[in-house]
Length: 154
Image 1 (cartoon, rainbow, N blue to C red):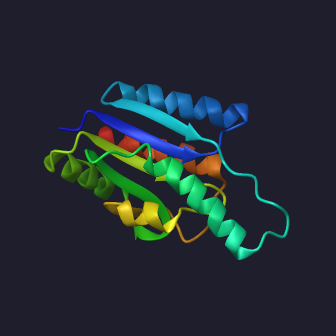
Image 2 (tube, rainbow, N blue to C red):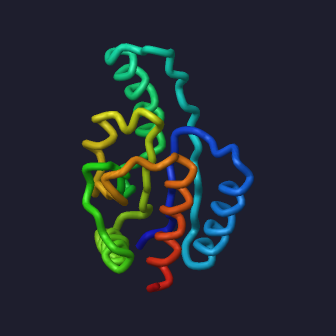
């Protein structure tokens, strides 16, 4: 049985509006399931960084992410190339994780360069909201809202 939903993100939200919306959805989720957010520091990206430097940055961020994932976690990574679903399908995915005797569902949002390949390999499910790229803070609000809706069968 799922005990906790974890959201692992790279980077912090700075805008008060997004912070307040996230806190609002976390409070609503906590009425059904425990929700924890783990904010990991993002690496600074030098201007005109070469691909090898960007890969190294993703690897460092990925290592931090993987340090916060356990074998008892059902991991859902947000990826542009993941599967797009509606809210009722997300509920079924969460129910399926519950039936797999996992202790936690762990959602992962990468940094501005995306997720390291090792993190994506660890995923039990790759979820996409769109083929478009969204700002990190907006994506966090959108994900929390969908978790809330899925838990409330909306």
